[in-house]
Structure formats: C-alpha cells, structure tokens
Length: 524
Image (cartoon, rainbow, N blue to C red; front, side, top):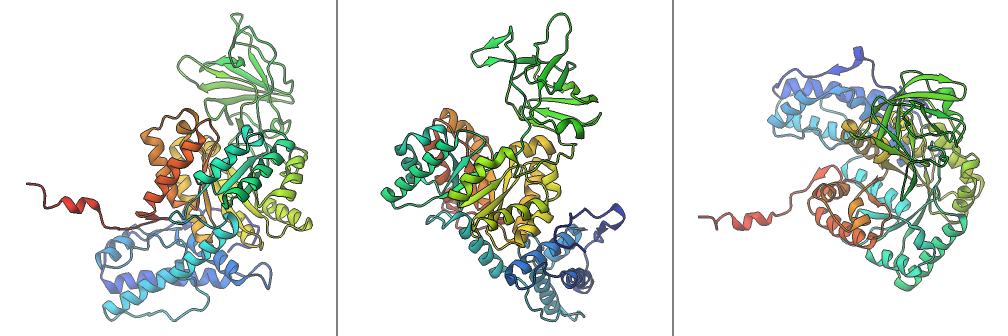
C-alpha cells in the first residue's frame, strides 16, 4: 500500500501475477473476476485521505488511480479473451472507473448463470458517467471552456513577435487558440508582459478567451557558449562530432575546439555544475535533442569525458545553447531556484496556469502548490511537464500529490525530451501509459512537442504529422510550437480535431455512421 508522497514502485518479478489461464465458462471467469475485485477492495480499504476534509471526489480519484495500478499489476489478456467470448466488456478503457467496471462485469456474469459471489454495492465508487464528469470539470478549471464542436483545446507557444504585434495575437485567438503559452526559457520579462497585454486587448476585440500558461524555465542542462572557431556557417560556430570521437563536458564555457588534425579532444561547457557530481562512467548522455549521443568514459571534478556512440553518417554539428540529457543520473536541482525567480514573479502576477518544467518528485508538486498558496493564488493551476525518465517513473506519486491540493492540475506529455530520455523506440508505449494513469486520476493531459512542426515552420505538411496531430484527440489539449506559419497550423489542427472528435473520445473509439456504407451497393 502506498501513502501520499511516497514513490510508487513496480511490482517485483515474483509478485507480477499472470492470469493467462485460457478461456473458461461463466463460473470460472466469475471466480477470477471476483478475486480481482477483492484485491481492489483491499486497495480501497487500505487507502486513507492524506488530509481530512478535502474534496471527496479528489480522494475518490486517488483511490481509483491506486486501484488501476493494482489491476495493471496483472496480465489480463486471457481474462479479456474469455469475457469477449461471453459477449461482455473486455475491461479495456476502464481507467477512469476501475471498480465500477469490474463490478458491472460481475453482475453480467451473474446474469449468465448460477455463479456465486455477486458483488455487494459499494458507496463512493466512481462510475462511467461520474468519471467523464470529473474529467470535464477539472479540464474546464485548468484550461477553460472548450469551443463548441471541439472538446480538445489548442495551446500555442508565443513567438517573440507576439510581444510587438497585437494583430498576430488577435489572429491566433480567432484561428482557434484556447491557451497562450509563454515559455519563460526565452525572451525577457518585458516581452512576457507585452504578450499578456496583447492577449487581453485581443480578447476585448474578439470576445474570445484564452488561458495564460506561464512555463517556468526549469533547470535544463545546456551546452556552454563556444569560443570563436575556424569552422563556421551562417548560424555561427559549431563542433562536428562523429561516432568514436571523444568529447569533454567541462565547467569552462569557452573551452571548446573543433576536431582538428592533431587529434586534440573537443571540449564544450556544461551549464549546470551539479551534473559533475551525479554523472558516473557508463552513463548515457544525449545532446541537442538526441542528435548526438555518447557514453561516459570517466568523470573528474570539473570534466566529464564522453565517447560519441550516436551521430549522423557524416558527423553531427553541436552548437552552444543545446540541451544535454542525462537519463541515468539523479539530478536534484531546486525547481524554484534563482533560474526561475523572474518567471515566478511574472507567473504569480499574470498566470492562469504555471507549467512546471523538469519536475520529477511529489515533494516538488507540494512545494510549488505551497508557494502559490503563500502568495494568495489558490486557483492558479499547475501543469506537470513529464519530460524526463525520472518524472515518468515517479508519475503516480506526483498525480497523488496534485490530487492532494485543491488547485487545478494537469499533465503535459513533453515528447521531445521524453523520447530522448526513454528512447524513441519506447515513446509510443510511455505516452500511452501516461494517458492511462492520468485518465485513472481524472486529470487532463496536454499532447505536446512537434505537433504540425513542419507546417508551422515551413508551410509544408507531412502524412506523419497529420496522423500525429489526429492522435492528439485522446488528450484534453494539443500544444503547437511557434513558427512563421503558425496561423495556418492552428487552422489545420482545429479542423483535424473537429473531424476526429466524431470518431474518438479519449481512449474510447466511437462508431459514427461511416460514409463508406453509402457505396456498398453501388459496386458491380
């Protein structure tokens, strides 16, 4: 059993139960489903609210999340096959109403024949309708009311031009923007305020509304600035690194050199000194959103030596200011440190919602909530940005911490950094698990990173990007990044989401009338 604030760990191998027994009749299946329900009741009985007197629905959501985790500790595939064979629910898509769904299956099995163990009614259990209602209420509280015909909101990251071009902000609002995202890792405080002010003017002119999302910059590791180099292009200095090359990350930001003929090792600065204390030989390091990868060979007090193991065929360029990911390291940096003070001041003054970059622990969720409470902002929402492997592993505990507060909360699947940290081959699996857990907690999700990115930047759309954007209908909000063609990207995403809403709602496919059925009898 887990209490609030503790990290939830996977079941050890010896406890990972398997229920793959093969199909059976109603009595056999009833026996197994009854054992599942008994385990869910045990979880519910062992759960106690962390603060007495809190909203009952939040406690029920926390209990449902823990029951979902208990359910997914089993291998249910053969149970599902048996249930399908009996014409019953396969227990798929029950994330938001676990116990109620298991009990509904028990009732149905009871009706099929003389099975023992019909469930007694339980109070305070979230059913299907209540699950949808809770998620809708919490989504409205965090992201605002959805536009008619499109329950999935659109969040847009502000370009620098939004600070000086009120017409651009007005056009974005009219095109379908529901949330303005101000990324405080870029621009100045004066520009953030100008973006906010331009939105307020646009709201008055259009009678449309948008939430202001202020993203804290977070303690992101980046490469340091380069000293002037003999190799340059129109974007400036760079290192070209190939597989097998050696690269040293060091404190000295200007210590970098191109791979020269004399065999000297390339060097580049690292923005956070804390990285040197937590990195160890054998750790993986990824640079520039995964374009370059390496293995740590040795670590000294002020230098981390890497051997490059992943790069483009002809080498990859590495410039200053590019991201560094340390997926194997336990990097603990104050989320509310000096790097976030300007953004925090602006967020307290202006934000409807605060985006928590690189958050990874339940204690940090509570600390940010307490920080906002102390500044009389009890209704300011928070978004947990899941962008590291550590954050993904600690997500259940962070969801419980978010439910333990009375403020609106949601989760952003920051798929760029998450793909680098967890591996691109695992991204599809990881983002599915995040969607399931958030649905079990009845908290909204933002589908983020590179949605329609080529369209926003170049005006060209790809089949893969259109398909990815359509998948965003399973979340409550889809985020677009900035680009010269952002207005076109907003319009295209608005159209895609409206079309897909007819066919899909969250994890549940819908079955509207297919136009293809019109042509069944026209073929010869």
